[in-house]
Amino acid sequence: MQHIKTYNQCIKHIKERTIIIEGPIEAKDLSTYRMESSLTAFRQPAEQLEALIDIAGLEEGRIIIARTDDLIIGYVTFLYPDPLERWSYKNLDYLLELGAIEVAYHFRGYQIGKELLNVSMSDGYMENYIIITTEYYWHWDLKNSGLDVFEYKNLMQRLMQSARFEVFQTNDPEITSHPANSLMARIGMQITRHQMQQFDEIRFMNRFFL
Image (cartoon, rainbow, N blue to C red; front, top):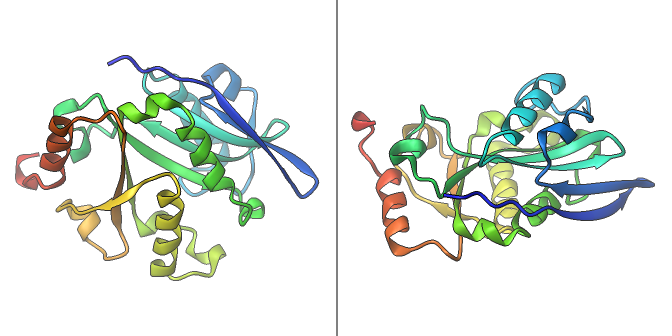
């Protein structure tokens, strides 16, 4: 499958700063930026920037960022699922995973997450994919948000629904291990019935045959 990527951009003005939301960003451009210090949900900022650069270098990888000047204050990633997870079973070339979405603490509440998703889906080629996101409560910033796990779950689901993601059932043991976890997916307009059947088989496959 050929992975066609079309650059898109939008501009917001927050706290007297100009915020540029853009992508997909190439690895060489990402290497000229730096990460805001509170972007620590998955790794330390410098390590996460290296991870973003690596993903941007993948054939299927897509990185959308929000930045002010050369400072990244938010990002969302898209890539093939981890080879060790069930979602990579059958190596479906039309199945991408929204691997991470994060916004710096001091820039939350300004719909930057929603804009990151809007810019991501402005590329019409995204309609050729099923895009999944696995929402695990242990990745959420419960401490700074002041929300409990179910309030945060509702927050994340509303955010994803703004980009046409829906909740899907699965027997994946990590998802079913806690009621706050969930699987969501965005079904591209060009996805066929056969492709959906393959996705359904993965959602409910017997874990002992992974």
